[in-house]
Length: 623
Image: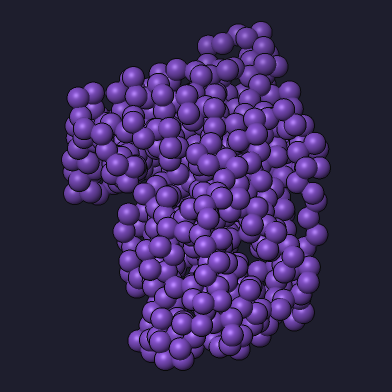
């Protein structure tokens, strides 16, 4: 039999004490007690009376750390112990856990699931080390971090809109963004005690609300400063928030998860070096969630159970969205989650519940694009009707602008819900169900963004993503159709979507990249059509026969019609001139130096969960 004997700071064994009564831990394990009843671990003193010792055994003192009976919170041992020091979780698969559980009275078994997954070991205070969870041990690195903190206090904390402007931005966020994606939780209504966290909260709210057209007049960073563009305003706030996070000034890990997730969704990279930052921030948020065990289920009776469910749902949804936006692998898998995801979704407010239901559809669609699931035949995923989803979510009374924003997300998933074999992706005649679903979904996205709810939507990144998918659908129709009428229709839709993305390119970097590419395609197409008509003489005949129909097409009947008419009046070539030669391939007459293969890979690959991660490569090529 092996006995573990405690040692002092010098490494010498401590004198074992004969105890009159076993400690609470040994009584539960029905083992003989050899532990000394120190006041740090057992909650007793050598001078305590038998009555007090008995009371201590029956009701453990509140000063010792307790195991996280539900998911960890900032004041629980999953993040900090009662003395304010971070705790460490050791899983059962680690050899250290076996010895730690046997030797340390201060360690406690995780009880988030039956049997537990490991133990929590409180860390002893060390006055010689910084308290920040991101502090570095090297003296030189610590000096650099101290300089970074000084910079944060002088520059980043002060980078915040004036109170009058922030009030407007906060109202926009609460009305349009928070109902759909409530990542900040109750922090918006409960004042934060920490000054730095309060400033970061204001910065992230301002960053998110800046995308709304109604925020244009309130993009300032000091009371007497000039009005900034969306790009400059968002770039300054994003850099400030990232610097504060990197300096380790946010020590509340639950709040840190919220900020990392919100920044992953709302930040806009400004250079190729930052292209993968949103996905990186998402992975850090997932890492912190796993560290605290938020993926494990808790009892419904716990006071923060609903808040933790909502936070888990936000991180889970963001993980799926990042997978679609950036072609990344999912980091959260249901086999590793203790919650019932459907129950978590059902417990949310109606707008957020509807959003999560659509993310659930996206999760199923992502499965089509995993390497091992490629289909040799045309495959389509059945989707419920969006109206029925609204009723099932209890969101019938949600404002129409909010529902329209979610409908764009729904149609984006619908476009991606069918998959064609690679050898059939360059044809204009896909499967009937695929063609109808994609065409209808793309038209609905263009109509909602450009006409029905112009300027009224909740401008989340799902809006430009949906328009980009619609642009890809119209490009494929314009690129591969053999019928002049459909080629012309595809070009008009392509122009309309390009115009919509151009109105968003000051806010969303993906829109800016797609616009640069689309404009290059339109310019080269106009050059090719002009060259063909000049060489064949088709232009003169078309002027005589199609003057009336051309005038009708230029009649502005809608916002998209205005955009197409303006484009035509500015020199855009009319595809109707080529109707006499239906087999003529305009793209075959492009300049040989024009990289048409790169355009095909980008715009058509946008429908295949892959090229989206290379958007900045395309921006360097075309921007």
